[in-house]
Image 1: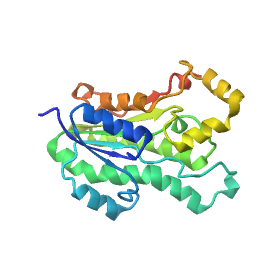
Image 2 (image 1 turned 90 degrees about the horizontal axis):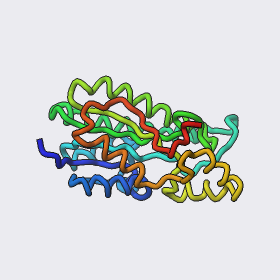
Image 3 (image 1 turned 135 degrees about the vertical axis):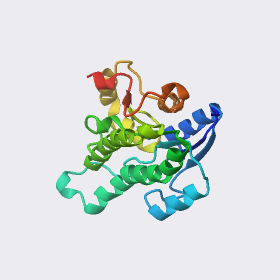
Image 4 (image 1 turned 120 degrees about the vertical axis):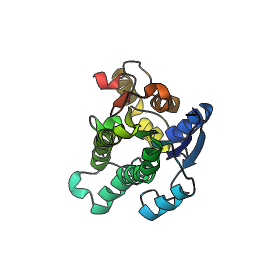
Length: 230
């Protein structure tokens, strides 16, 4: 089987998604990057049409998500729409895109799926956004369940839980909001004493998508400079 595959990366407009697209192309794969400007990946029909235009997909990286512009509010102030919007952006996109590719992967007896969750899914969200932490935790559970279901077909499913990565306007604004003392405190809780870069996450993705990771599935790898140690 050729080492060169067809890959789809969601949430590819900037930040981690863009870095993952670049890293997979450097591996020699044909990579399609898709963002919400191209297709509403929380909509079943739109997902079906998008993937129908590509054909066989060997590698899927579910990176779409985020807090969709929301800020912390107490739970009693969270509307149904607030909650659903974040779940649609993070979990629904992961479900629909995974469903779109699994038939072809099972037929081919080979596939790689990598879900980009968050340290918030393993602990708490620094933003305090309840739906975000919940959706990211659900992504991790979905990863485990799909690894169990698809392993017999030669398809591995793994997950990355990034720490604080300055990768988009939202995370930059969050970092700046902490002020000098808050930034010092955050860095003190990271073993390597630095923030993450989008390339750090992309490196994890390339490991999970290589042939050498064939016996690795159902795992959630924290790439966070050691923040999860504390």
